[in-house]
Amino acid sequence: MQHKLPTGISVLVVGSGLGGLTFAIEAYRQGHDVQIMEKRPKIEDFGKLLVVAPIYKDFQAWPGFLDKVHKHTVTPSEIHVFQHNGESLGNFPLGTPELASLAVNRLGMHLEFVQYAEDLGIKTQYSTHATEYTETDDAGIVILSDGRKLTTDMVVAADGVGSGSWKLILDKFEKPVSSGYAIYRADFPTGDAMKNPIIVEHYNGAKTRMELYFGPNAHGDTGNAKEDWWWTTSAGDALPFVETWSPFVKEMIKFTPDNSGASMAMEDGFSLATCLQIGGKHGIPLATRVHNKLRFERVACAQKMGFKNRQKFHNSDSTRVEKNPDRIGNFTGQWLLRHDPVQYAYDNFQACADHLLHSTEFKNSNFVPRHTFKQWTVTEFLEAQEQGKEIEDDGDWS
Image (cartoon, rainbow, N blue to C red; front, top):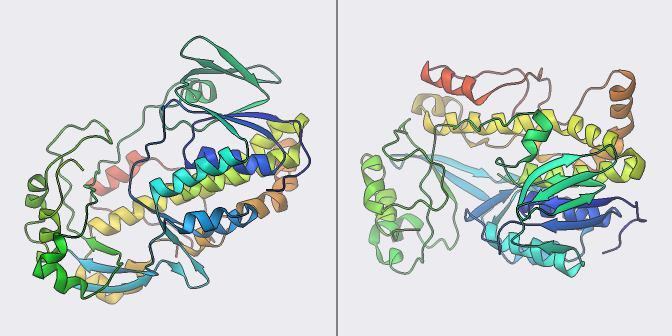
């Protein structure tokens, strides 16, 4: 990979998730000196399938990377949508024909990130746990669990919602608010399942297929509310919740053995690395402020769209679907698909910096068109849901 002239900026990335690794590799390309630390002894990613918005076009500046990722992709260009009783609601493209989304095995893609960073010489310290963050006027400091202090020009805290960086940034820890929803997830070999006549008939010879089922608003919690990726259950525990569903869904669950969010983070990585390159070594504080200003409204709207989609999935009404089927298949707005975070940073850095320094006018153009942005909370969504209200917003979210 050809990288730009050295900026002299040293960066320590805490956390080697997809967002942290995207930033680290792009920061290397932009000429920064990067190191990574990770509290886990090895990469053990969770979730099986990741649908990446067309941000992956920005990876074209990373020679050979997309070829490696494509080894882990699945092939469907569309998603088949059904009511919970098996009624088809239509087939909808993943993205748009010219900006198709990429469906990829999450762990496979994550490991390609790790290997690519290693091949570039970006060092990662594993089993290294950050417990506290602090700073001086010209340096960021990470305090480790063994008492050591690491000092660098800039620290990127990419270590998740439980990060100790919240205390430094907000002066207090904001406890995450539960969305009130959880899902069953599983993966298993297809051999025995494809001997079932109901399943065989449903797939009708298809080798790869992606489906989504809209269910009635049933989300009762009969277990522990603790958030835990390792919590397991049996297929028998899941079956009572789908008693009225399509026979195909129930048969698939029976074959499930027991004990079995990323585009925005990657966009953030590209944006922050670019802002640092533009701002230079003596402009790090301003560069981070510009990055935050350029990204906040877009990310908040993307998160809000996630809640809107969830509400749509759990409260699909057949009459409304028949009147407006395209609304059901529209999971990702064009404003999300058609965005280049690197070019956007280059195009808007100076105007945004002038706004922050001199209060000149500046408006972002990378979120929902014609939408008047206002901050929102998860609690507001949950309260509206309990009252049977649908969150309506101005602008074109399609």
